[in-house]
Image (cartoon, rainbow, N blue to C red):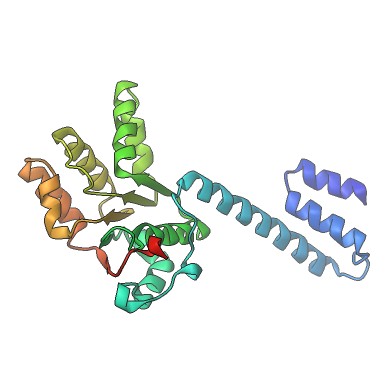
Length: 239
């Protein structure tokens, strides 16, 4: 009996090995049919691998906060549209490459909402990456100096959901606008992007330097097809 557990571990099936050990300890092995026992073992392995995958995806996302859809307070007066949030929680917008825009004053819960959607995406098996916009461009600058920028852009392009926080906190220079354009172009209609900003969308043009052609292209790919949230009310950090 112990040899079976050891063989399962050697085959890298720890979920099945643990389940088998549990069945032995509770003396349930003899009372189960082959089909029922196999079903239990397979389910245990599936659940274990799913949990490990979710843990890895959440860790690699680098979320600023820990938040989930279940923790959100659906207050329509503040802009937390329950119907829209629950629809996004299905992950269908990620498959369709639909952008999401979350705007509002500081402390209204923009990052919390984006994190909750990102966390839900991880639980659904999607690759997510959360960046503060300044940190993103710092990493791009380093990748450019190390001659690894194409690899960085390729990795970003393959991320199912990219979350960009603090968009508009500082005016972007010409190179940064071009870099943003490349990322948005790679993701357009293929991968989803959530953009979080204190600035109203109509003010975004001003932060994209003076390159009107590129600014028009960036905003055209983000704004017109996006699902939007405008969060209002006093700062949640006061509570």
